[in-house]
Length: 138
Length: 138
Image: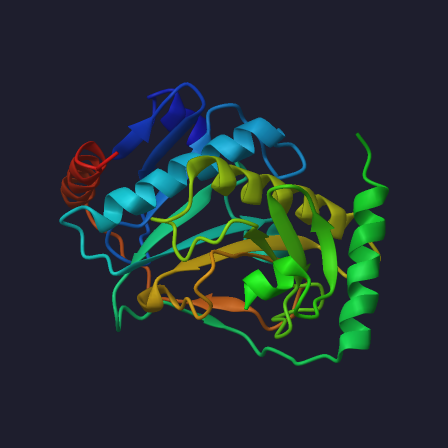
């Protein structure tokens, strides 16, 4: 679907585009002004996304966050959100970074139960992440 | 606080660092493996953060997401989350990108009430965002 938007074949309310990314309004906004930034080159997941296209998606989101705060859209804060994989809530399999303007009482929040593990557990988890990093292919 | 971690003066379970960013385990993880990526140069907000440091934060998070999926940490998906401003839930005023490994039933989710505005409303909002972008200083 996002490839159709990028190609101009599917209607969208565009806010920004360059050679690498396109940004447009989410049709199911969590708050007014909620927009999506996507890479032009199709990538279903972070695993498929190049490092450079990823950085360009973030750079566009960064400037759009500044633009929202500088605009007539109600915006006292901004969240970025990205879901990679079904387990993370990804529904459209073309990488997209959500940019969500926030105002007090807008009804959007994270629901979670944070823990407070000890340093030993945190260090052991960190070691596992470093091992995963060291053994990445490519 | 994050400046103390970056300087090595405050304990942290580090997973990655380079000349531009440091990544370490969140001490209040929403799921096991939840980590934070921060720019070395202090920036309280996205407004204070340079474009290049922002891209480097994202690039590190991108590789750490791949590392989590490639590690012994339970991870079937990944969320990125960033809060800019009190209204967005920011609590530590040094820009940080959350990288959160996900598994089914881990208890983490977004709580929100999405709307379905018509195209006219989406187009009008998009116009406001573009005006905000066009009038950004710098």
